[in-house]
Amino acid sequence: MAEQFDVVVIGSGPAGYHAAIRAAQLGLKTACIDAAIGKDGKPALGGTCLRVGCIPSKALLDSSRQFWNLQHLFGDHGITTKDAKIDVGTMIGRKDKIVKQFTGGIALLFKANKITPYYGFGQLQPGNIVKVKQHDGTEVELKGINVIIAAGSDSIELPFAKFDNEYIVDNVGALDFTSVPKRLAVIGAGVIGLELGSVWKRLGAEVTILEALPDFLPAADAEVSKTAAKEFKKQGLDIRLGAKVSKTEVKKKEVHVTYSDAEGEKTLVVDRLLVAVGRKAASKGLLAEGTGVKLNERGQVEVDEHCHTGVDGVWAVGDCVRGPMLAHKGFEEGIAVAELIAGLPGHVNLDTVPWVIYTEPEIAWVGKTEQQLKAESIPYKTGSFPFAALGRAVAMGEPVGFVKVIAHEETDRILGMHLVGVGVSELVHEGVLAMEFSGSADDLARICHAHPTLSEAVHDAAMSVAKRSIHKVN
Image 1 (cartoon, rainbow, N blue to C red):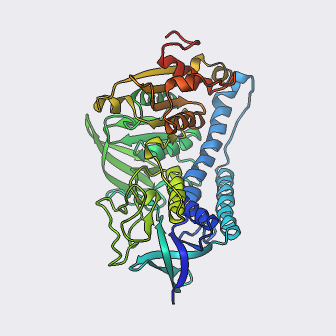
Image 2: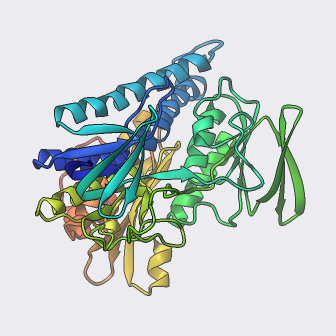
Image 3: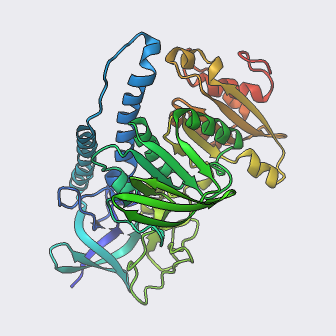
């Protein structure tokens, strides 16, 4: 006899645990299933983000940034050091401690909200039954009036670069190197490749990033991409565009990478290879025959604008559905679906989901780029402001980058905000908030910003849209 629940959530990643907690807050009897095992061999909640993604990568980015600044920037402040060293084991241990803190925190939140966790692989059956193959070898069946699929995503593996978890790794392996590789190659100049490539470059590795596309970060604003690429080159990241990898081979503890570019076929020999070409929905084995839930050609669960699958009581959220594979997008979808189930309004505006790349400098944006607006023949105007003219940024020794605001030519409504520089992962939310409330560039320009702060760059960029910036020539 299946145990009865109001809501059964498959997956405890960002989308899943938000959905479960919000459902429980609303008085719904809730269960959440997850198959993940932590480094200590015990079940671990939190999904890719908390265990092997967002949180651990930021921990390493911060550690490596401290080490880089110690060697390259502290001298400008009159701070001198000698023979600085990095203990990789201690750094990885710090990262693991942070991960354990947060995965344990989800367990405590589940307990406090009376959510029943099940540890194992959940498969949806017809009739809103979820069969769980638990880690102890037993099987249980859960019946949900509503089932929320939040299965997450997996790294994409290339047929010619199979993961061996030692020499050829995905993001999980690159978070756990026991020493700094002398030579590291990265396939893919996306978010994961740039962030983890930056970590190991700062710690002393020779990093080569091979990107098949001819343009660098084409999803970002072209000016942002150009500025970021220039800074990465200064830092010593070797980013090779139009480089299409066709073969990899491990020989004598080295990885031989064969790729082709405009000059022909080449071979790169490295100590470690990180494959970071994107992620795919973790939908394999998720659906039994006859559920009525459909997958698209990319393996994603098909849903409508409210994350409903078309099957009564079955919903799907996060990385396993359409839209950007971003933890915060999953957060909001999970909450929205829980509220819809409870009869409350719930909605996620995919047009105002912010993007962030946590490199140095940081890259962030929300809304449309100039490239997109030109392609769609939408009239627009822009205003920008450089960090080099910003008192706080210069005082911090962080003068690189700018903020750009894009507004509709006729209505002045903000269509996008694009940023590169220090702290822009926080500043982008001024654009998110303004766009969510259909704000104009003039609205943003008339909000008083504290001085001296980094946020003044947003203020002056908004003023610059109307050619009235005070601190630069318009």
